[in-house]
Image: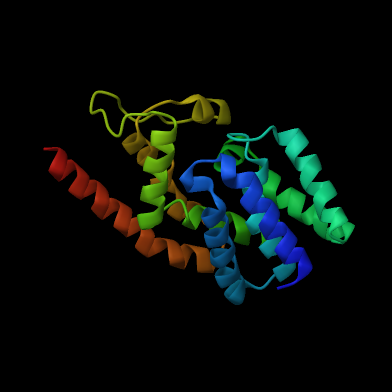
Length: 210
């Protein structure tokens, strides 16, 4: 393990200790693993992909003040000896890849950004995605399900961020859309089975709810 990787992992473990279980160190590890698996088929700068995948949630506005966090990330990577071009690539990736940013009209452009975005979205669907959704819902003290509250079609990032609906609605407001929002062929292929698992889960959930 390189000193750069070791120092990044130490930083991520420390910073994400304040988040819920769905956005913790192990989420970063899974996103990194997904990204490297996609990159095996798609290519790209593996160092940029790995660094961005590991640190992407250090600028998440659910937990951190974004402008300060972005600056801190840039300084940290410079101190680790990462060159300016790669730092700029990493910063661009982690500041444009979120679902809310896409609702604002921002689009990922580079191959590396498409890979990391797909890797993060893969962790939001399937069995782990379901667990993460309920983990965050519990963190925000939301109901699991309320049949009297219908899903909302979010027209913009503000509507999405300020929505406090129950967790099952989150499937219809975001998670079930992610399969068709994958930006790489490898990501789309990996998303198929996870998407199907969520559909089967929802069918079982409603059957048990009665």
